[in-house]
Length: 531
Length: 88
Ligand code: HEM
Ligand SMILES: [Cu+2]
Image 1 (cartoon, protein in one colour):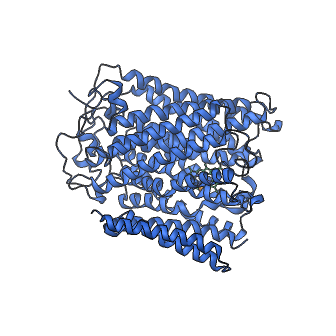
Image 2 (cartoon, rainbow over the protein chains, first blue to last red):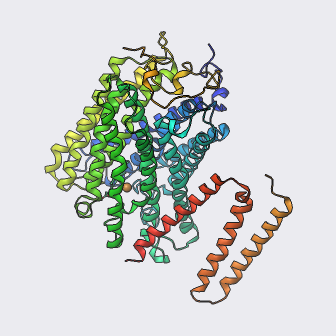
Image 3 (cartoon, chains in turn red, green):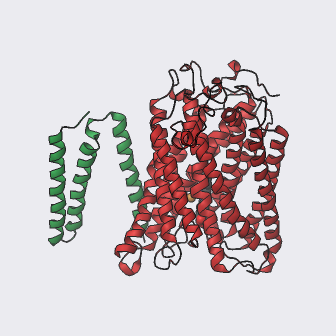
């Protein structure tokens, strides 16, 4: 049967494709590549931290390692991963459309992303950057002695890729829903992707402008951030975090959407409080713009501003906990099956809760003064970004793999790696909470001896985590060569993407689907094909 | 909706004239009013671009909502940043 994968085998049929599903695969390859680049830097960081002495690399090199780890992971993996891979593949399928609203623009986004990736690689190969992923002035201006400019250009270009993807999603979701698919019937993944797309469009220009301002200051000596020229370094932090706090929600909102889908399917129940879960995505997106100053509590911003940002930060906890509580309520009396994707979803719920709650500790002014710039912060955001986003991404890949490829992955291996990842993750990052609380600062290559045990645990955990990520790579690739095909709706899930064949035909649906019921109506769903 | 050529040209000329007046205003010494005047001229220019070059004037309510939204967000950026600078 004809489908999007066998519709053409030439290189051109991939590199010039306008099919959102093929573009999703291109993105899958790109972000996986950067995940391994970021992982390589992380490995070196953890190796250095096995011993208290700064013996593996000198401090300048260490600065570069953690910077490039952060840049690769944040800008080239976490921000694009779920929207451009899972979102690109699923948004049209879930809303019953034949493609995104602007297919050429979609391909252009991938080319921009690739260009940005090449710039970033260039900067790495020429010797790297040492400012931290936050590019704070004056490290990135007056005292810059690494390839800041090239890396900033990379992030600038990657930003345009994000903006175009966001624009495409917003227009598509507004304009191309199938007949009968009203807003209140949309799958929750669409709601959260919509909220993310708004963030892409509204927040990303600010980082672009900020990086451009750095360039203007350096090239034309206009005082913007440099006090010697009449500028203010804190202005950089304001502008940077105006983008980058919303960006942390760009990373986690799509993950929240994925988990809603997984929890519904594997409990065979409509998500409890659908309207609240959908609305909380928008609430998170909007409130996320009001809290950026919590990254600047000790920077010298005014005490009054610190208090305002602290209070506002607490507000974000409300919509976030609505989600967790409603998933839990969905599980109650659900018919739960613990397939691999569901293991990831449950892992997500626990780890995201820990990450979010420690966010509240950090948003508390007094506590933050104690733990800011320590490993406590590092543990906090890794619980959200790795324990949350990467877990959900893995869950999503397993859940939609049969749809994307028509093949299923080996369930036993899937469960085993989910378990390994969960154990490895906690062993890596839980000790970092303690280290930070005890006062170990982040971003140094040496530390006092009493911190060694916890650091060794963390490094050991990281190697377990690495193994957990390698397994799926192998069995996913292996599954492509398997003879056995899988049905169109192996999980017995609701949602339009399951009504078309696997892998879907080039234009998605043979007939335009018509929607007559709410999302997650499991009373009418097919029985799961897989036990 | 296609904007008539003449109108586009007129808007373009108006923008050039306003740019000239921005430059001219910089040579006058009006105290605090220099900044206010410069921002006012810039505001008029931005509105012309949004209304005619970006076709906002001929667009649906939904597009107005999105355009208004972006100005609202710019407002958030300015307000919460000033919330620091004005209370130092
Ligand atoms: C939900 C997704 C979240 C993600 C992805 C995330 C990510 C991050 C990141 C990357 C940083 C460190 C930035 C740096 O200094 O390099 C950070 C710090 C921080 N986060 Fe989160 N965070 C999330 C949620 C929250 C929540 C819900 C709160 C509080 C309501 C919060 C409060 C904080 C605070 C206060 C800091 C600054 C700590 C310090 O530098 O002293 N975060 N977060
Ligand atoms: Cu934040």
